[in-house]
Length: 173
Image (cartoon, rainbow, N blue to C red; front, side):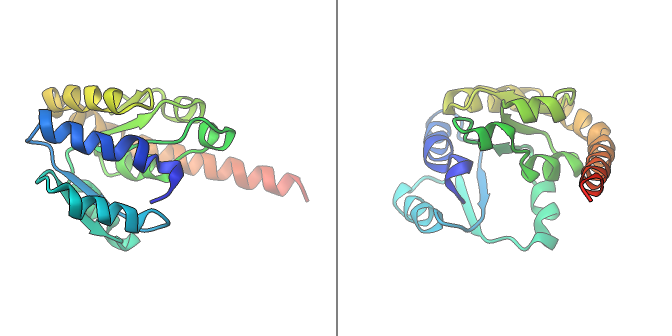
């Protein structure tokens, strides 16, 4: 949990918004980091029933947690160069196990994942995430089917990117 993940700007308002408008959506939140204590305080003061905070998830168990979700969220701080051009591992973790995702629309996300039908790219606002959550919920089976078909493509894309990075690094020596 860090500022680049937009916890305060996107996730917390989204949890509150969904609690009022979409009671059937439950947020499964894991993680640690500099905002962990703030998030834990929010959860204890919030009182809503639409959030389950599980804390740190060991990486070897992460795929099981992700696979248990109907869809996942990845908000990114797109106000900085770093945020606009980073590729969050969270996106590939979700798509590679066949789970649809909603992510902040950034140049890097569009360039790498733009052709995936199981990824909804949205403006970085709680309202945009909420709208995408409602759409995926209405068409869940179609999004899940697309995610399952695209899962192997994600893995191939990641392998190709890794190969390109290694070749680029090797050309420097």
